[in-house]
Image (cartoon, rainbow, N blue to C red; front, side, top):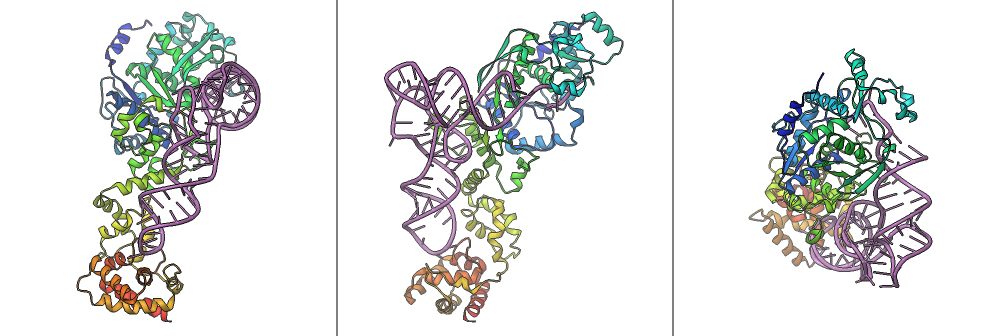
Length: 496
RNA sequence: GGCCCGGUGGUCAAGCGGUUAAGACUCCGCCCUUUCACGGCGGCAACACGGGUUCGAGUCCCGUCCGGGUCACCA
């Protein structure tokens, strides 16, 4: 069977050239790791920073690991994060298809081409797992390596099962360049004749990757540093085909602690999990971007970045070589920053479901409660436990009326509440200003500091020691009737 | 174990031969104050170790130690 050179020529002609092209190439597992998300982000940033093209490619060559609907998680996450792709399975593009399982015949053809060029060979051996595991498989001793091509071809034609292996030079060394790590050289004898085409006819990740990256015109190959050690083999593959080698960008991993990568298995949160924990997408992206990359020059001090700002500021120079430990506390800090930076209406909108989880009373104003919360929560999930007292006055200990700094105790509190009740009862308008003025005026009249009066009022109104907002805001939100009811209850409690 | 990579406070992270070694998170103290937050101010805390090179080394070289990755018909 002769090679159809026309096919290869046509494939070459389709390749877009002249612009930066990057690709995010996940294998569909059903969830988005934080590390994956960061890789996607960096890949997107490199493309956007250069005015290039960002491509999504699905790598599903492992038939044993297919997960139903897993690709949807990827589409949804990228869209939600604003990491829009210019080409991909769902939007098409000049070098479609973008799903590896649909490119099967391509890999076979290119593998055959490589065999023809002498950089790969058919292998009919069935090595046992123990042989492979022991690492004592001696490539040079593989009889298939030196099998004449026509002989091998005959066996293939006869239907004998085979794999195709890369023929690594026995001598010399291979040097490749990585944008983050610089030049790395390894001895060829430390490389093995890796399988390119599996017995089932599908390509291995390593081979499909090289073929697709070339055929899709990828200029920057961004991936995890776990691929650093297979990069020399990639180089040899590119050279074997006579293709230009892309710029490698190997990103160090996101760790859960000093020795373990973040992983689903250890129960580390995925992107979806973080959202469920009350984190905002832009805050997650911002934090994750800075985990492994830092801005230079004028921007060196900046820590809050929108996606657009990141795209403008991003550069390979700022990438870190060492692994970074994911710190939920710092993510929390970024989240708090984003929460506070929101317009009050916007915050009220995102906070509403969390407020309504515990505040069922429709008479209580969500925007008013949200206003108290905005500077007081770091995650949306902090909200419910902070505002539960609005709906129902909790059981509380009269000891709460005692506070040293405010100079209150049960006796003082009784006196304060007795004075506060008529003062509030007589108010014309139930506004924060009116309540504030009435109470401050009363404190002045009683010749006590504000806190001495405010403390018992707040405790009686809320029934808990720590509340978002002070006595004035709480009373205002509660409304006149409910406030007075609670103050009377408090008075009774403190006199008992 | 072989090969490859990495190593600045607890964490992220500036630094690219000459700095009192930035900044952020966390923690602590103070101020503000109607509790708590927010905000403001201040503080604790680091160049893994040993040799070189150099007038001078966190920055360059070598070694040691520690950590990670990889050695699949998984990606």
